[in-house]
Image 1 (cartoon, rainbow, N blue to C red):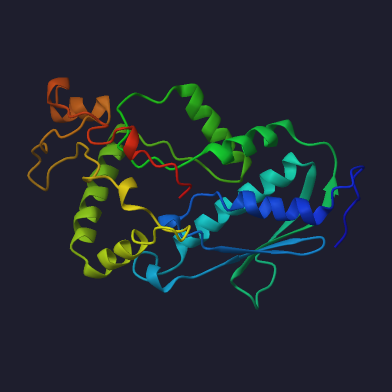
Image 2: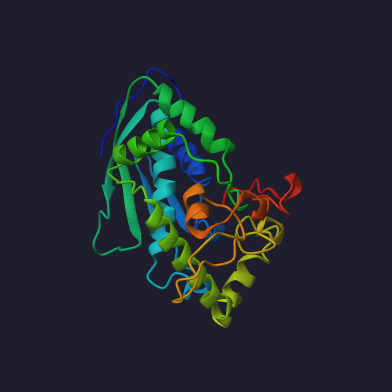
Length: 262
C-alpha cells in the first residue's frame, strides 16, 4: 500500500478518520449503522456487523450489505472532497466475509468540487418517513438520479403505471403479513426503544398509520377504496377523484419530521 504525501501537513490518517465519521451518517436499515471502520496508516477497512435482532427482518443480510454500501459511498465521497482518490478493493479477503471493502493506494490531488457539494448534502440529509405527495417527479430530476446510479455501476428501474400499481399491491400485502408476525414486531419494538444509544429509530419518527396508497383490490377486479392519491395514473385507473384524497402529510407536521440519519 502506498500513497503520495500532499502539499499540506494534514496527515492521511486524519483524512481517513474523517471519512469514516462522514460515512457514519449514511442511511441504514432501522438506523442500525451496521458497520465498523478500521483506520490504518494508509488504508481504511469496512466490516459489516450482524445483529441478532435483525434475524427475521433481514435473514440473509441483504439490507445490512446495502447499508454498508451507502456508508462506503459516503467515505469515498469524503475522501474525494479532500483530494484523495483511493483504490477500492471489494471483498478483499475470502477468509473474512464480513470484511466488505478496503480503501487503499491513496493518491492525492485537488479536491473534487462535486464531492465537496455532496459532503455538504451528507451532513444535511435525513430520512423523512412521511407519505409522499402525488406531485410528479420532474424528468430532469429522474435523468439526474439515473445518471448518478449509472456512475456507481447500478441501474435505476423506472416503473410504469401498471408496475407502480403492482408494487403498491405487493407492498400492501407484505405490510399486512408483517403486522401479524410477532417476531418482526418484536424486532421493530427493539429498534424503536433505543433512545440515547445513537442507533435505532425513536418512536416519534414512525408514521402514526401505514402510508396509504391506491391499489387494486384482491381478485375481484374491483378497485380498492381511494385512500390517498399517490399517482395521477393510479387515480384514473381506480376512479378516485381529488375530492376523495386524504392529505399526503396528514398527521405529520414539522414536529414529526425526522432529522435522524437513519
